[in-house]
Length: 167
Image 1 (cartoon, rainbow, N blue to C red):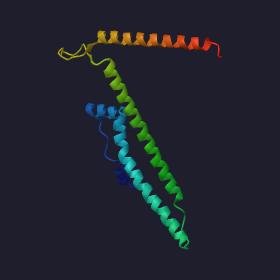
Image 2: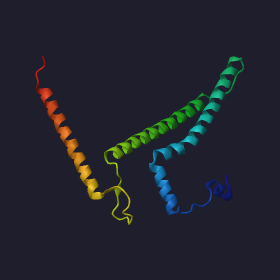
Image 3: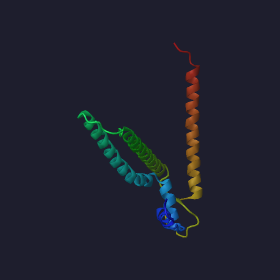
C-alpha cells in the first residue's frame, strides 16, 4: 500500500495556472499539425525501442525453443501489442503530416489568388501593405461569382451530355 508521501510524489508538483502566453502556445500546439508531429516523435522513438526489445524477446524465445530447452510463456502478445502501438503512432504522424501539407497548399493557393494579407482597420500602422477588409470582400465575391459561373457551365454541359442519344 502506498504511503501518502508516495502518492503525492506520483501525482507530481501542484499545477499552476498557465499564463496567457503558455495558454496561447498550448492552444497553438493543439491546432498546428506540425506541433502535433513534433510531440509524437519522441513517443514514436520510445515505441520503436519497445518494439525492438519485444522482438528480441520473441527471437530469443524461438531460439531457446529450437535448441530444445523448454522456455516459459511466449512474449508474442507483448510484441503484437507494441507493434500495434508503433503502427498507431505512425498513422497519427502520417495524418498530421498530410494535414500540414494540405494546409500549406491552401496557404499557397490563398497567396496566389489574394497576394496581400487583409489589414485590420483596428491597427494604427497604416503603412502595412495589404487589402482592407472591404477590398477583401470584393475579391471574395468576385471569386465566388467566377466559381458559380464555372459550376453552371459544367452543369449545363453534363445535362446536354446526358440528353444526347448514344450510338
